[in-house]
Image (cartoon, rainbow, N blue to C red; front, side):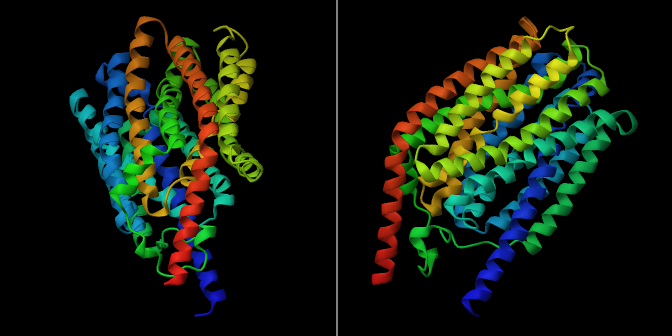
Length: 435
């Protein structure tokens, strides 16, 4: 087969795979985030308190954290598409179990089981890094991550518009079935790619499979100071996302007195703007990265700072105040808060060997999941003692301020770590060509 034909096939496989992963994340996020819009009817059916509600979400996050290292290790050793197909099948099965849970204790257990597939994303991002070169990864990750807010939007529509006619249990049956169908599609049509095949330093190197997963290289992650700082940032940075995801609908309906229509009119524009923030932040990060190796973390720092300032302005609108003003400020906040996500992910891969990238992402997510697991429970306790609005405002602003400091330190260390990796990959290429 000619080089041109091979390149055409590579691009076709990348396009099919990228589209399949986008759909997976879109539907999976919709299923995962349905729990937020369905908060009211689920709490009512089981007679739950805010603290119990926080525990429901914390349980799934704890299970997910346990499975992150396993998923990362598996993805770096075996076929990434086949493993993601398994994750999709597990998503469908555990969601069905949610729908048939008869009481609070059973629902707590079945909801916790959904965390198994929630930790399956490292393989997606690892494979995308082998479909697209470093200069494009921020944009591609940003596009991929658009699936998360769009999934949230689908969850809102399903949760608020259909719960009265279908009931929350049947909605879970629908989304679980989609996971099972998608698992077969991924298994049959998505192809893997050689690890490191899109690194400029490894261009033309044959038999990339010789560079295999190594625990020694995994241990070396914690000697890279930029990664250590970004790990810390990740632990802190997930608090706002989980508080907003699991409590903002309750805040609008229980404290601001919004009905379903007002909630949709407020949240839909904010989520659409949030979706635009992912590729925009990734694109800006890519362009600034070409000028300075600190570019991506600089964009991340700007995003969390702007998000914190705008959230304070948003939550300062009185409870009986203008819904239009509140919605506009919320949308402005939503534009900036996803800026960090594609740039942090790209930064991890900028300093990490290709054969351990899924594990690196899994380590990152494992650390983040500890923060994720704590966030809903902490927010629930604060909400019961003070108010949901206070929990959202205090947790988000404090943690975003800490994230800004972490990004500043990451900017100090990341140029050297990037240069070290590039030198290592160049040495690999030289050695392979000499051999």
